Image (cartoon, rainbow, N blue to C red; front, side, top):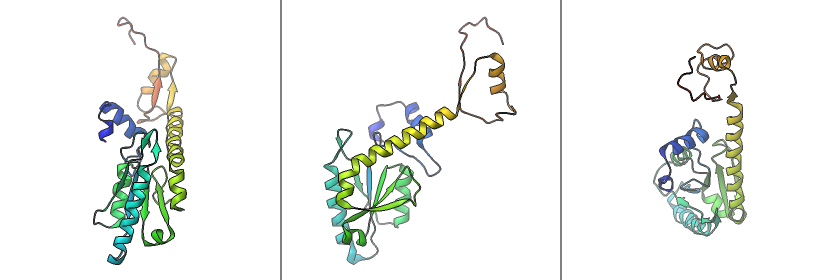
Length: 198
C-alpha cells in the first residue's frame, strides 16, 4: 500500500470498511498498488520453464498498457507454494485481477481470469490478446461495480432524522424497528448551542 501513504489512516480504514468482504480486502483498481497478479500453475518440472516464460512475457506486455494514465502494475508470483495458497493470499490482499496460468493456458495462448469483485470460483478463460486489449475496460467495469455497490449500501443504511423523538428512537437500544446493533448513518440537525438541553 505504498501508494496510499499520502492519505490519512481514516481514509484507508474507510476504504477497507466500504469495500472489504469476508475474504479480505477488495481494492478499487484506481487505488490498488497491484492491478494484476499472475499466478503460474506448475504441476511438473517439465512445464516450469514454458509456464514461467509465458507469465514473464505476459507481465511485460501488460505493463505497457496504460490504465488511469499510468502503466499497469503487475506482479508475477513465483513463490514455491501450492496454487490454492497463492490464490487466497492475493484474494486477501484485494488485488483486482488474478491470472492463473498453467500448461493448458500456455498451449491455448489464453489466461484464466479471476475478478476480486466476484466470488473466488467465478473465473473465466479468455484468449491472451483479447484480455490484454480489453484489460482497461475490465478494470473500469470493476471500478464502477465497486462504486455502485458502495453507493447502494450507503443509501440503504442512511436515515434522515428531523425530530428529537426520532433521534432518541434511533439511538435507543432495543428499538423495535432497529434493534441494536443497527449501525449505519444518521443525518440529524445540529443545534450548535450549549444551552440546549435534551
